[in-house]
Length: 355
Image (cartoon, rainbow, N blue to C red; front, side, top):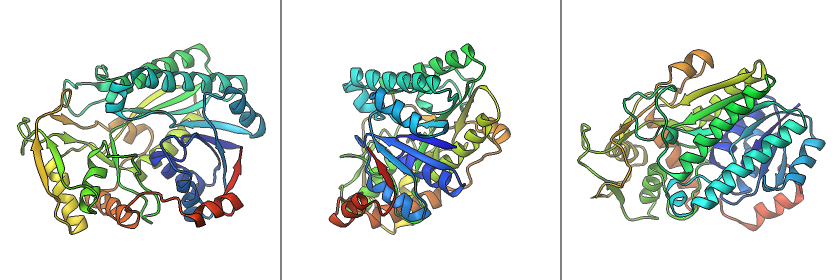
């Protein structure tokens, strides 16, 4: 039986594919590569020395998706695919609502048609909006403040309604906090398009000389150093959380919601200092005005995931920064489209491909 990974060429998806392959799962990946690179998949195969099947396909292609389900004995789906930039979602709300909502509805309809009822859904801590208290537990009030977060929140409700309609469904909703880091090999990592939206990729690009300085948005928050505090989790810990969630839904039904974080926060200035130590580079920064909607402190209550999934984050901030720096140094321009990689991909020497 196979596990279908939508968005498997992306940052979190590619790391999760490694964990699945190394755990012995058969993996089928669907990705339209709109914000990811097929080169990450070559490197997944290189790291694991295992094969998998990849389809370059958009989830909006219902007929194509049905052909995949008809061709493979799919047991469960881990759903990463979707548009994911908060700032961009404010500028392009219709694109975010259409892409994230419609693609997930089509996926669920096809799953239902082929009697596949197990789903791990990639959600986000953005569904909490402006938290009333920290740490944030899964039963905290919800109230996303941007279109991206609202798509996640609405899809969470749709999946809960779906599971309530048919007891065969088992759905695990994972609310991520702030994924950072990279695989220890330095071969795969976060590869943002253009200027990074997130703090750690921005810091690492300053350290490697691609950007001149980090903009610190606000130093007057009610925190020890005045800068915002967030919960950062190593992407490999996050990937391992997906395996634990998959194992649980395979054995049961209904809907479970879990925070995936470390349960502790670090400020912007603490992150800059930690990255300076990891990289040996000076990270210049300048304080700018607060951004609308930013909050002072946000970190997870992870007790439920610790207890029910037997999962916890094990990698500290030092390892997160070291792995991010190793990836950035080895890949200063991200995944480069060199002719050798393209030739190997075309030849099928790293993994099976299908159209």
